[in-house]
Length: 423
Ligand SMILES: [Zn+2]
Image (cartoon, rainbow, N blue to C red; front, side):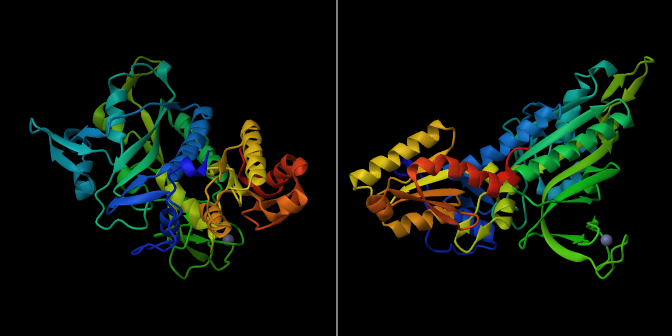
């Protein structure tokens, strides 16, 4: 893509009223813009990151045997009265009347809707097990939206629901989702802790949270550096219950949460199936959430320096940017354009900075937007025909001839970024 044709409004100044480094960098790098408190637009660069995260999630969900569907955002309030959760959720749920005075709400989550759907379409144990998921916008009327996309009123989630005829089936699906989650977060370049959690509003009996240690995180995780034990509900000064080592207290962002719901919802909604003996039984459920839009600030919290974002390879909006430093110099521009076209042909996603800007501006924007590899054509190219390959993560600069470029790119991907490539 030609930079001159993109919409990447980067900011030199630190925006006001920003509470975390990820929120600051998402605004400065031109990923998002605020509409009203807790509500953001995704600009093209932010959307590219979001879509890459969604694709990783889709691949891992599909390969774990889940099927994608799309449930409505608009829900009738009566489903929430029926489940009894309308009081628990209270004012967090947006509610209003339609023109026929029907009470509606904007879905903060979809257990009620999916259980109602399955109840009307599930008949036999032969249809089980089943895992359904969606990637959908959700709403919460937050008292105090904070930290940009970390706590916003409109956000994107992946929510999956499993349906089984026995507890052993639920255990299998739960384990396979837990493993899929670990792959997803690793591919997103996240260092993530898995913590046994309180099921809370969802109900049910077993639950795990996926927590990303980050300075601006609002949740606390206690972590044992010796035996890797984690817990979210331990007494402040208590040592590790397994090895007696002092625990570390980490601020964290919750990026995923999975629950064994059991029959809580299926009993209320009478979502039954006929078992092998011909009897009606409530279907056994699990639910599995990922805060997709929240992944982006979590990734940035763990991957940045004083100059900007440092994208892990698997999630970067572009993998490489090509920087001709003097676009009015024909030799530089033509060579840079040729490199850009060849890299695109080789399957990389490339941003070609064809803007007539000073070198300093181009370098600053390249660092700020965090693209993993930068290829610079400047004075050294004119005098000696040499390019510079800069690795954003390490800051390493390699001077090389054009003929060695592809080999050097492959080498740096292997050495620096393999950890976050597809498994
Ligand atoms: Zn320990």
